[in-house]
Amino acid sequence: MTTAALTDVTNEADHVDFLLYELDRAMIVDDDILPTDVVRLGSVVRYRAASAGERTIKLVLPREVDDARSYRLSVTSMHGAALLGLRPKQSLSWIGPTGQADSVEVLQVANSRVRA
Image (cartoon, helix red, strand yellow):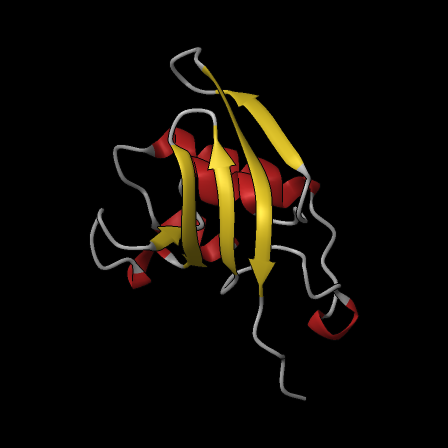
């Protein structure tokens, strides 16, 4: 995901910085030992955001987002980066680049089984 963040340099550089910060705090583990309800790349997530209400999305790489109205959410977006590693009933709050507070709360997570 670091590569995705570094290659998704747009006018939303603050979002990429946020993802890089989150990745720096993250602990990398094998998918087979990660609980099935942890948000990761490819997860389908129902969440509530202070700034956007409730949504159901699939967390994907930037190149997999069809358009802004798609249910796919880029991991390099503020909400996408914030959701990584969370489980249902967990939330993350932050102050955005404009000084406005935002937060996400995970309501439900679905992940496909990882093949060995």
